[in-house]
Amino acid sequence: MTLAKRLRSERMRLRLSQAELAVLGGVQANAQGLYEKGSRIPRADYLGCLAALGMDVLFIITGVRRPSMMEQLSGDESEFIQAWRSLPTEDRLAFEQILTTLARPVAVELISV
Image 1 (tube, rainbow, N blue to C red):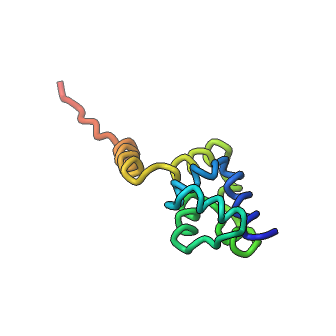
Image 2: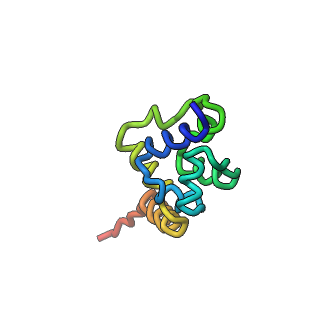
Image 3: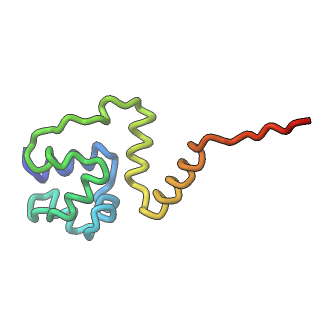
């Protein structure tokens, strides 16, 4: 299997269109199409973006799958992580603040009567 076919299979695994992956990878839609045709080789910064989305970049480059923690997660956990990885940075930061606040223990003061 070629790099182009492996890239396409990873895109399909994450259920993304070429246009969606192009935006998330920081390239033009036509570049994504050329990568998947094998007419153009993806750059390292693009592959770094794919890794941040949860794509198996080792597999894309070498054809060898890396062991994945995702395989050990429940379906809900896996979907949550994939959704998290697709969030824009500012949304991730807002979400982190909410989670941090919710995770703090609530101090309860007893009132003497």
